[in-house]
Image (cartoon, rainbow, N blue to C red; front, side, top):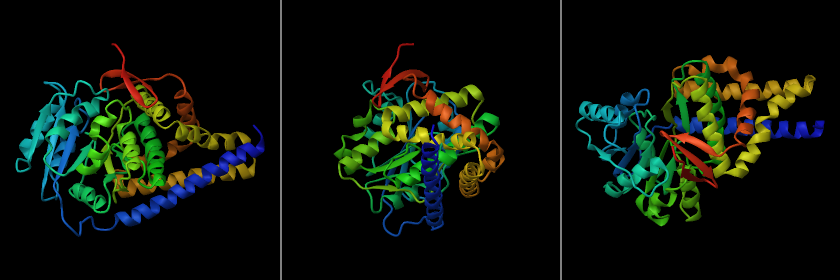
Length: 370
């Protein structure tokens, strides 16, 4: 590879990192503003798809119910009787009995996406004009639903910057470091135009314009696809002022690698252009290292310093547990593992998700036989 190509890739990667850091600083400045809506607080139906007994599930669900918001309901959605998640949902409702909440069992038989399959059941019975959908690993603070309402004050749909915290062990911290320094910047650089599934809030009339969640029932990345459909329908999208915190203690090499590969194959299938751009940019640190020489090593140090700054800002503002601080010595490993993961994502088209195996092509999911 010629020096010109190496430096073109490196400068593009440095520019992206620098712009991402500026976007993060601006976002953090906005996040300091008190999350209190100035106008009305419309009713919100919060749909919570559940599957299995995730680590920290009970504290996540209890925090979901303890919202400083006047009018909301929580629908815990699960596919089958006896799911271990139901015990946590029942205990959370017992601990916070004054909030309208209930469990809804079953799935839509025609939906290929297992998350959307239960969300469709909740969408049909939700009673409020705003529908929010949140993953089970989100651990919200009491102003979480006020963030949803704030985002929808001048928009038709709102989504959150996802931030993982609570990582334990070598591989979990490495995966969290990658996620919190890459996914966060990608969302911020998208400036709210890309919806993320940690939490999305949509007005019913906007949801009706795109055919409801039924319109993304066969999509592997239903959040991204919903955002695309809403933009095409002329709806206004917004980014919430504060992040959605996802409790993700993680596992070992196999679990972390499987999650990373599922993410890369999902992105490649749903947004191939973004994937094609991400591949060379992720390789920039490794190219600079192999290039050698004082200018290349100085550029590598600058790239790494920006990424470390992003990790520190995210940790101190959102994680609160120093999990990213403890992971900072692992940053050089990302020079190799990040491009390697994206290269591996070029091969194969199957992913494991919620106890099933799917083939993903063109953004669509097809259930494979066991």
